[in-house]
Length: 281
Ligand SMILES: C[S@@+](CC[C@H](N)C(=O)[O-])C[C@H]1O[C@@H](n2cnc3c(N)ncnc32)[C@H](O)[C@@H]1O
Image 1: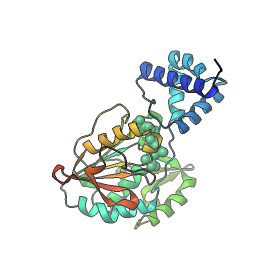
Image 2: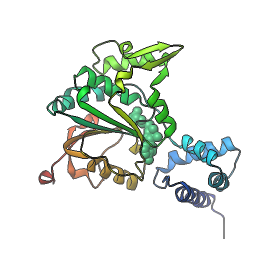
Image 3: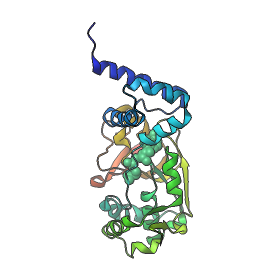
Image 4: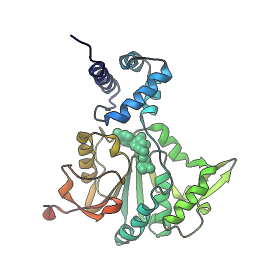
């Protein structure tokens, strides 16, 4: 039988993902293949390994190697007030509704190193809603969560963040929200007071209850259709009736099993509203 290198690579990749799942419970089996393969290739190059199957023994037997692999697997690109227009829509089309509630719970899923969480905290403060809010910010990457908890970011990025903040409708100076020291900016402690950072894996963990707002942006793009469906169902089940779901601008509810359980709220910014059961199509 003739050897088909692509087929062999596919077999090796599936064995690798299965091994990781069975050994550590981390489920990458339904991550979108293109970016997954790029990350695996990077790890192979750094470890000097020339076949995917060569990663299996060190991953199974060396916890440190696995931790490094995990770190490499997660794309943590993020920004303060990333996509400022999204934050404008949040401020003008969602916050006024949330202001009518005595207390709000927010789940920020896939929060990476926390920049989006601090952005949201600033917005809630400026809208007088922060003291009535509890924010749960989760990610499966503990390295990112550690950075998020500390809230210390390179000072050189602050000018860009200040511009994003103003474009997002910010009313003060972004520098009011951090202290600069030794080339770093530490976000004010008061922004963290109502935030709980926690480990949560969207591929395997369960729902959060009765959230009025769920933000999960630029995470679904890394998943295949089946995993997107699981995650969207999880996000739906975590929302209260008429709760808001925010996705990234390249993500949608299309082709998912919860598509008819939401209505568009601000479609251009991928903000959806959960429908009560009697309104479903
Ligand atoms: C590109 S970042 C997006 C960060 C932020 N939401 C934003 O839009 O700027 C994607 C994040 O999703 C997280 N992620 C990927 N798979 C995950 C999973 N199964 N469970 C939880 N978080 C996951 C990654 O660790 C990473 O922090």
